[in-house]
Image 1 (tube, rainbow, N blue to C red):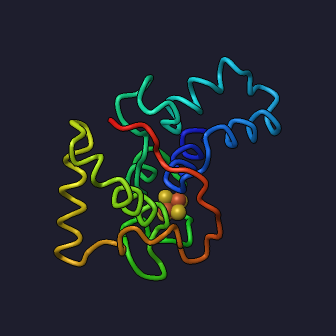
Image 2: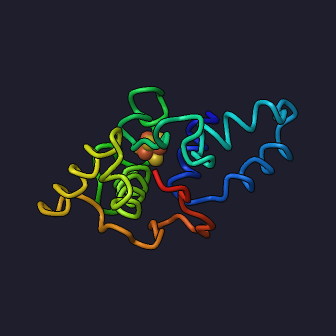
Length: 149
Ligand code: SF4
């Protein structure tokens, strides 16, 4: 569950330190030695890649593969656009679009920027760099991935 929350927060652009504080406040087992590597490091890429070689972000397809959450969900995990599209898909491609320039040179993310470009050409993906406006989801984006790769 924590990795899904971190995935969601990273794609939204939530400040990793703020997310860590939220865990500290809400979970009795949120010890510092757990939060630093798991949330600030691997979960949100808040260390810019010191711990993990790429951001741990995933679209709805990954959530669907790794859990049973999608079956009863009101959204369609296979759709990328439209009112029934899974928000995780939108957020994933929006995240990729916001960081396209950086990831185009990243050995483990390069392929996804090619997919992003393909969606753009074919019109099969969400409008890129939407400014974080996901229908039905209100949030404030407070940070983006900072360190250059
Ligand atoms: S279909 Fe629903 S449960 Fe599955 S990833 Fe999308 S929002 Fe989450």
